[in-house]
Length: 253
Image (cartoon, rainbow, N blue to C red; front, side, top):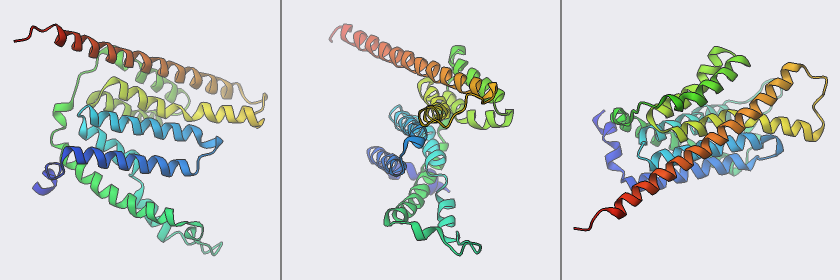
């Protein structure tokens, strides 16, 4: 167990960052292979999570970064392998690997190796997670509360909680910007699906009022979250500039 806890010390921090970038890029590239008009929203959600993973690592929130990439990107690696190996259908006399190309098998093996590495890193950094804890300001909870109300209204309490858990965790152990981007990843798919329906004519004006309220609200929420992200970035930039000015004003010894 001690070897696992010390695993992070055995891999140089610079090498960890390089490996993290490689893992994120491979996951994004694999997601982009099947990109189409109907999957643009899902791909943007993937890019949002990729940004959060890299940003948190740069900010020194290593445990949170590794936890997100492990669960949200490579958490399904083992299941993918089992489906590939045991996906034979007696009814259709077919197997999913009949349509696999070389990249699919390479990615399955790569994902399994990545999952093992990420699990070791996540466990290793878990021992130091307490130092990452922060007490968010009341205003920083606004996005989570509003999105939570939407998810509860158009889903259920259970689904709202399960979707928001990562945004809450990132707010507590990361920062507000990362939490907002996670919230954006939860919502961004639906507006694009709606726009695709409008563009290809598959929508119907006879759809229920619930349908229209749902889509209009989620578009407004996405705009709200994006505005919050912009203000958060501006706030971070302003803090950096003030810190830089203070350093510049310090008298040279």
